Image (cartoon, rainbow, N blue to C red; front, side):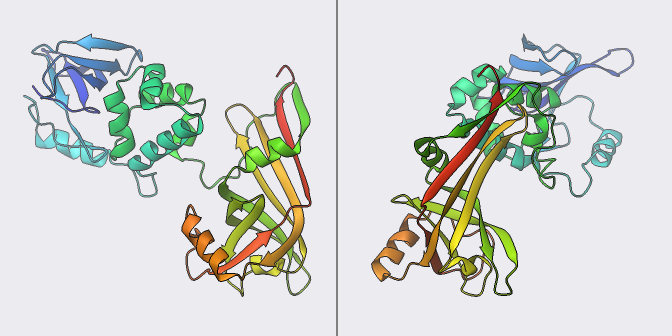
Length: 307
């Protein structure tokens, strides 16, 4: 018997062949995949060391979907057909995206893989597997990871990507406090996605998201000369960034107001291109750099009243 991280251990009744218990293999003790295994049982969420008996077999998981069990004494076409029919419907989030979201949340909290694995009660090797492969962890493992990363299973699965943030309940005793300039600068950080508010050529207001960078206390972003964000040039504009913690019903926002201008000096433009953390998400030719020099920087944070 050999297994990989993420495979399922299935224990069946010797008399009827029905599944008595199953769980996800979250830890290996031998590099060749032979027993024993650390198994998170689906019925209790407990992780135990298991030496499989003759009534157990491995259900291998390939590319985030159940594959034909290798090394099992009970594979047949009926089981393969049932697994195929259980495939997720079109539009279901790619299982590989779960690992990316786990990695993003882990980095956001400043946690190592070892610390995250300890909190979630899984092996660091299994966490590495989740982050690097198109895995499809069990609900029990997702719940443990969500708790370890102070987020939700919904957020890790990306099921709410088409919903506006902040649909949770408000705090029972919220506290709204103003942020100082230094904390606002820290929250702006070095780059990210923010919203710029402009008046378009026909005099109508518009708010559009842009990928931005912070360079020497100025907010810079790339756009196209004929785009809506380009209307910021030569005017005083508002630029806003925020973050909402859905699990804890808290968040913050920072608003910068100041004049916007085009960056024209060739050396400065080359430096901005070289230092940019990402290409503009909308794609296309966006070679016009716009700089906003904040003259007013304000922010607010919502937290529980006792914090």
